[in-house]
Image (cartoon, rainbow, N blue to C red; front, side, top):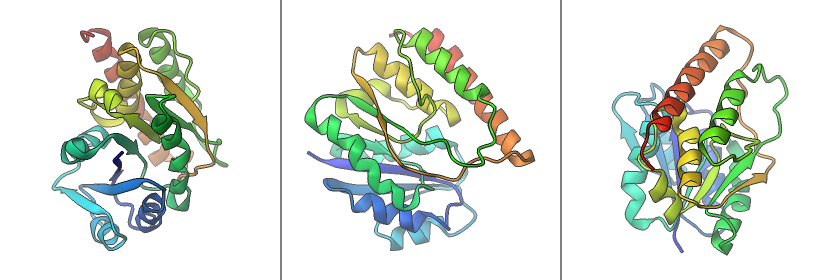
Length: 226
């Protein structure tokens, strides 16, 4: 059973080597594909040196677009698709906890539930919107980690979920589409950790974009045939 990891990355030169190395160490992983989403640093070169296959996007297309580029490169070789953020560092090795239920046939998609990071600056607006939207559009599913980017999907699940929604709406759309397909979604507690968004101007701007992307994805899903 082929397991392919997709890791979208934008200016992650400091963390990408550790993330790739940890993902490659996971039992059963056959390929790690880093999608360099228009980085201005050496993310792609460092990822390649760490052993990843690298797809370089000439301009920044956003998380969903980068994930789709990775899926297009892996679709003929992915029995299980694993989505991991590029800033997980050594904790990317916990992807094994996400893969196991899919391999065992007890889940079609697993979603990592991460501990709340120290110093997290959010007020829960985006998470609350995503949680309510998934419940309303995804057959009442009560998600504890609606925005989590760390997931493992069976072939049936990723086929039901594509094409990935654009930007930061990708995860919410992915969950809703998999649930609408009648597939099994299981949330899995993990100890993964990534860089938290702080309470500064850049952090609030990021959350503002995320809110708009999630809202746009939910509006499109409302009118999407399924």
